[in-house]
Image 1 (cartoon, protein in one colour):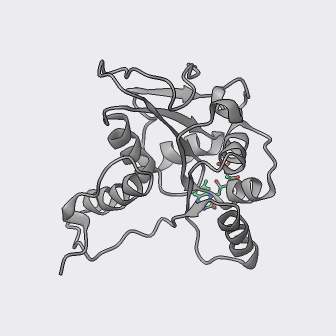
Image 2 (cartoon, helix red, strand yellow):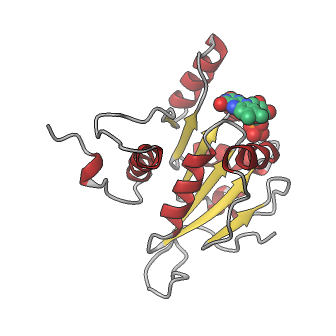
Length: 205
Ligand SMILES: Cc1cc2nc3c(=O)[nH]c(=O)nc-3n(C[C@H](O)[C@H](O)[C@H](O)COP(=O)(O)O)c2cc1C
């Protein structure tokens, strides 16, 4: 597996040949349902100029992705982070990522981040994002929610994370599942500061 050699927004020069600072985005995928959101986010974000995506998948995420989407992630303009190794720049506050998105975020991973376990690369990078006051967006998918889930989300919100539940809106009147997924991912890209929201998904009565 490739491990990103880039560090933070201080790194200049994009892989697409354009100049300017690169924004390093860690996309962490866990074993919650909703691989389709991660696949679309990966496609969109890795196509953005000046953005370098670093994909991290848990073991369960790979299983669920295969189950829900029928294949593995296709290689693209992104780099891979191995979850079992801490030899990655983003595991240190000295080279923190510009933004981390955990999409979808299982209740198990959410709990580990809330507890500050830092026991694999995912939990450590999230821990670094929080301690460095860098953006951390968690997209949980679970229903109903227990008091433990809610308390963990409260703790994470208090620590500076953004909880953005996988709850796509219907007011844009999506005409397909893909459209629904696109609309939700567009909101996440906006939330992460990576791309302005397509007017098609903005409420405009
Ligand atoms: C098909 C499938 C769907 C799942 N969906 C969810 C889910 O929506 N939310 C959740 O919190 N866990 C879900 N789980 C359970 C998690 O995968 C499990 O808790 C796992 O330990 C999460 O590990 P990870 O966070 O390291 O990926 C699902 C498991 C499977 C096999």
